[in-house]
Image (cartoon, rainbow, N blue to C red):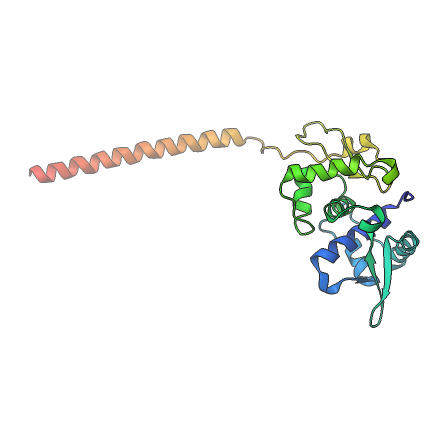
Length: 222
């Protein structure tokens, strides 16, 4: 069974999975590229500001676990992940774990978007089956790797989290949950006003058409 990993260690693994599938020409990654990936501002939650030294320390902690493999490039050392083999999971599961490690807890719908470039799922139910399989792994296989969080107030879907950093404090995520998009204040009133304006314009067009028709009829009779 794996020891509990740190947030930066899981970020390193998530970046390696992501870059393997999105920029294969530059994979395995140099320490500099790996650090840049960890500190990206887009598609990352939380945003980090890790130094190369800190990322190197995370890599050094993952190598004895066989989660990261070091290889020599032309000038610098390069790093690749070994997540699927170590955890005994397939590519579909690796992609979901990477998305959760990079962006934190997400709903199945959010995960479908987050994994578009990592692995093709037939539909959301297929993705959910992978999440449930990861959540119900027997202890003999290393135990669960994901957990379904309680539905946050106002949310329509449950969010999921990975367990590589240890048990998840579900109550913390309930308070921190991203709210569902809400309609802007006054939108209904604005729509009603626009509808009234359209109705008025339609009436004006009808009156103008009637005037034109009467004018045409008068000219014909004259």
